[in-house]
Image (tube, rainbow, N blue to C red; front, side, top):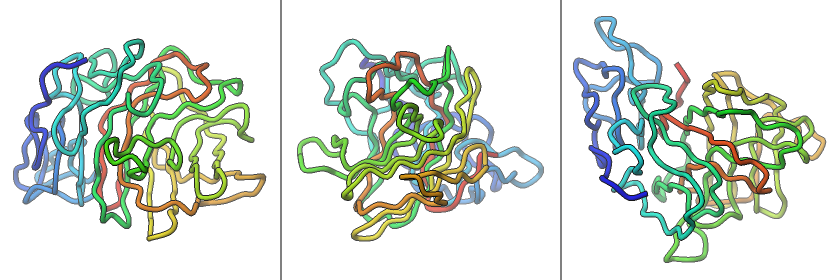
Length: 288
């Protein structure tokens, strides 16, 4: 990959859209730190004077990335993004303009073989409650029940290797698709570790060649994590070990790294998945 770092990779609202009078212009891009002074609150709320909210107009913002300020073919660099520790040359992970939810680019992932080849961001060690929003686009085909597990994004703790923070696969929180072991098959909210795998099977189907919005709500303390997923602003319910649930909880702690990039845990999913308008915040977000 390589290439230039994204513009505005640290702090504030990056190049591509500033804040003015409480409204953020559409197409605001890049990585964002804490909320800029005067930025409006919850995602989807229009600013003053009828101006439309941009994808990074999010209250309690910790991170926002539209990939528009990243050189085509490259990856965002600089805090909170971490350098890759990947030695595989067969996968795809890059900013690309083929599909985009807003602006001109998104992040495309395909055939990523292991965690060190995913794009990682450090969200910080002191988060007890936060929301993650990701717009996802399954290109060429949507998974079917014969597909085992494909993740769109993941959250993980630091892991046991100090030189590879966020490189662990277990424990982890995975949002993606689960087929042959999920009843009903469909989009999953899965937590590994904590004694057993907690797989929340929603039955909601991913769309082929269309954008869907995932918002994951995470609450954690020193010994456990509780999660809830909404898709296109519709709260999801789950079947987990044959039991209906409205939350997925596990004895996993200190989840702090966001990972992006298509992972197929069975190796049988080779189509690209695009993600865009990725945001993390300490206030609730919607897709609008």
